[in-house]
Length: 334
Image (cartoon, rainbow, N blue to C red):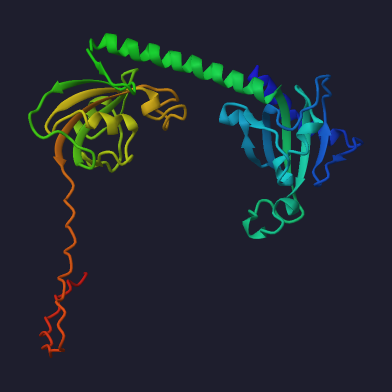
């Protein structure tokens, strides 16, 4: 189905060339458009959320963007137009299932900042947009749909996490935030405190048991993990400063120097609905095996010395100027 739709979109420019008698319509900002299907559905309104496929090209048919190549259509809320290139004056001319061809003058797009103009969009040229409106929703309907999709992914996350815990026979404790953990090697050394600099060895896995990061070379090699230029050594983390995911900041405070643990961190305390990179999908619970190699407390701040009060006397007395001390030598930088 997607391939057929793509072929239909790609055929639109050729169809346009064949229909030379077709009159271009024009928006107040100067964009020209032709509508090739006229759906009986209501026209798009400002604040509607639209889902659409788009191919953006130069006049020489060089493709600049293709939503089919990206793998999913574009979704956005229609707003008052800020620039002719945002197509916000074109969308209200269309309805769900409509297809259109749009020409946008690049001179209008780059007016006032011509230095940003790329060489493949010279003066006097147009950008070409081939549009296919897939869905039109009110803002409330779009929010409801998104919330339902998020709830479904969250349920799937919980199921995957529970399956991982059962398969690995983990007996975990839970914190109020939802972090789950088990200490696999206890230690009687000093407990980690907020502000400590800790050196940590770790291996991170998804609930599908895929290693996505580690500081330990044997684990990386066994997992076939390629980390070009990686130095395999404990990483340095200042606890409680937000330099790591929330699950780590919270979990490290549960451990002592020298201890080992497994953290099962829900997405709320990790990378959330965005995910991270190719390996960590949105709404992913992550599993970390960690070892606190060393915990270094912050250096105490040196208190400022109060000034010595000067005793006042009725008569002025001559004071001897103190001898000047030699300036400390400054170490020259190489």
